[in-house]
Amino acid sequence: MRFALLASGSGGNAMVIEHDGYALLLDAGISLRETLARMASAGMEGVRPAALLLSHEHSFICLHYKLPKHGTEIEIQARVLWNETGRILKLAVPTLVPAPRYLGQVAYGVQELPTDGHEVVAQKWVGVFAADQGMGLTCINEGAYGSDFCDGELRLSLLRSPGYAAHPILDRPIMPQDRFSPRIDQGERSFTFWMNAGPGKERRERVDGEALAHNERPFALSFFPSGAGDPPLPAVRLSDAVVQMTAFKQAEQSEDYVIRVFEPTGEPRSTILEVVPLDMRQEIWLSGFEIKTFRVDPVNRSFREADLLEAPALEDQEV
Image 1 (cartoon, rainbow, N blue to C red):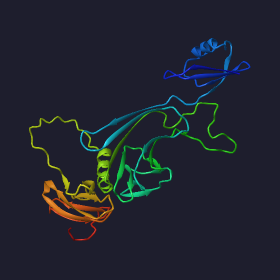
Image 2 (cartoon, one colour):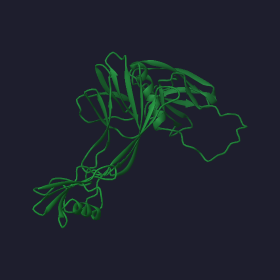
Image 3 (cartoon, rainbow, N blue to C red):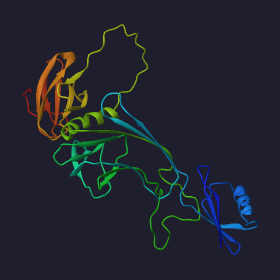
Image 4 (cartoon, rainbow, N blue to C red):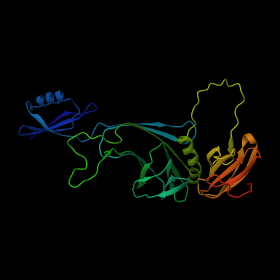
């Protein structure tokens, strides 16, 4: 039995094990012609490779870190060229948060997630918080919803590369090995995350608004104003930076406007809802995780609380 190292480095790896006229190639990072030439120079001329064993495919990841001039938010951009099959790729973030709780955003709320390494999903953000709320680390995503947390490490799921259709039927193989089968998640992919840390209570109050801003950016219109006119007024304004406005639209069956607000931290609070063009202001009280919907009558300049279907919650009673 003979062994030879044919290539090693960023240009490609290749090794060969020869026995009794047969050769096993370990990786194939160089061309076949170059492989045979180097085997000949190693005293294996005339020996043909009989099998190939790959230790890894040619996959790459490039990480960009953007450090802020002001503030503490760090943007991480991951550009991945993924050629693996049946493997999951995760971005691991070690943490030093004592007695950690793992939280994730769900629809109109926050859910506590397991810390034992089980795969979980959340919406726009996940966070690791100390039990006493003294410290918090939050991570906002741009569409990568899977993750897990274990032994102080936050692991964000990026790619999985499973087969499109694979299922065991009697004694058939799950994925036939005698043909090319396309895989999910292969090729080039890009991911963006925003990491931030600080006092736990402060992070809980700010992360929902930050996630909303990162994921629902305003779109640009093809207009070129001179800048000489008056700046437009905001349509709706909230005095509290924590409370979110999740909807502002015209009512389905009238000329009223519908405004929906939400408290995202689980703590009761109040805010001043102001419809600026109509010069209307109203103080609103919200319980933790409460959603409230209001109808705004622009003719009578009145607020009326409504249900989620926009029907008045209290007949003939204004807020």
